[in-house]
Amino acid sequence: MVLTSQQQSDVRDIINELITDDNFLSKFAECVAGKVFERLDKKIQCLYTKSTELETEVVKLKSENLNLKNRLNNLEQNQKLKSLKIIGIPPETEENTKVLVQKKLIEKLKLSKTSFEIKRCYRLKSTEERFGAVCLE
Image (tube, rainbow, N blue to C red; front, side, top):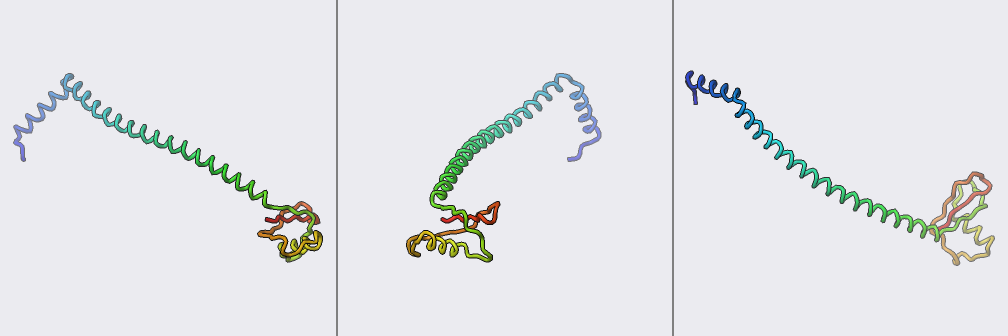
């Protein structure tokens, strides 16, 4: 739609009148502010809801984390109950720790090979080589 020169002039005059009318500007500003506040309120409510959900999730995760820590601690304590630390077996070059410990147990404690089972056997770090230690599980 093309406006005539007269129509364009009339539109300009109406806009100029509105821009200079304090009552119109006040209502226009109030209307715009109302729309802005409505949108902000919706966004704030959405953020509040999300924040509440996240806080609930954090509490849940903290509880799960504590339970997992307790379970891990119990498992570690239980594992320690099933292990034996032997001190005084000096390391040998290219040793098979399991075989070495089996030999020492049979030799020193006069155990038969079938009277015990070693699931895992490994060296523990020691500050002094001559007091080498192994852990049996």
